[in-house]
Each structure stands twice: as C-alpha cells, then as structure tokens.
Image (cartoon, rainbow, N blue to C red; front, side, top):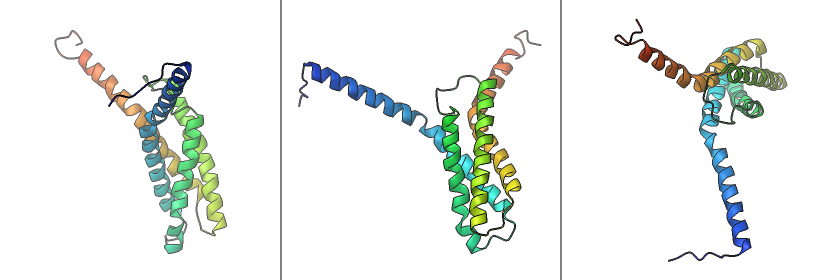
Length: 172
C-alpha cells in the first residue's frame, strides 16, 4: 500500500508543521529522564527530611500529610529548575556557571518548598521544625540533583587523568 502525497503548497506547509511538531515533542522528551531523576531525588530528600523534622512521633494523622511534604516540594523545585535553565541544552562541561545554576535552583527551590511545607504543617497543626527540614532537604537535594549532573563528568575527568599518568607514558 502506497501513501499518496500531494504536491501542492498546502502539502509542503503541512510537512513543515508536522516536522516542527515532532521536533518540539522530541526536545521535551529529551529531558524527561533528567526530570524524572530530579523528581526522585527531590521527593526522596523531602520525605527523608519530613520524617526527621517532625517534632512529634509520626502517627497516622501525620503520615496522612506526608505526601504533601514530598509532592509539593517536587512540583515547586521542578518549576524552579526549569526557570533556572537546568533542562536546557545538554551540558558538556562541569563549568562554574552550571554549578552555580544548580546551587541557585536548589537554594531557591528549597526556600520556597520550606515555606510551603511549613504553611501546610501550621495549617494542619502538625509540629514541624522548618529549619531542620529545610537544611536536611536542601543538602540531600543538592547531592541528588548536583550528583546526577556532575558525576559522569567527574569520572570522565578521572579517567583522563589516569590515562595520562600511566607508567611508561612519561607521566611519572
């Protein structure tokens, strides 16, 4: 079965629009893996921090709101990460600019998320230490989000360094 294709101007315009749509869709899906890794790192960090930061024992009423303490920071942080340009072009080098963007995005996301979770805790009369939660979550998020982006570059640099200093290469 052969697909019939028109030869007029309308057909060329349709082809360009379809090509543009497919390209935009591919660019969005290109960063889906990185967004998923970030969501897991952020959610895990905030759940861990939320468990550590409760002033009282984690009873059923407290655990009921645990999803908010993990979900709200994920949404806030992913929006902040997008605004900071963390899902833009593929990063080739572990530069100072890239590291500064990661630290700034994590700092702003953590601050906004801490305010949000403290507001939820106050509204629900749940004892929560915002300073402890924000500190633990911020550090764990920085390790997760920054580690995902820079670990492969760090090990690539280490591999290059070991290749240049192998015995017999004159590196001794």
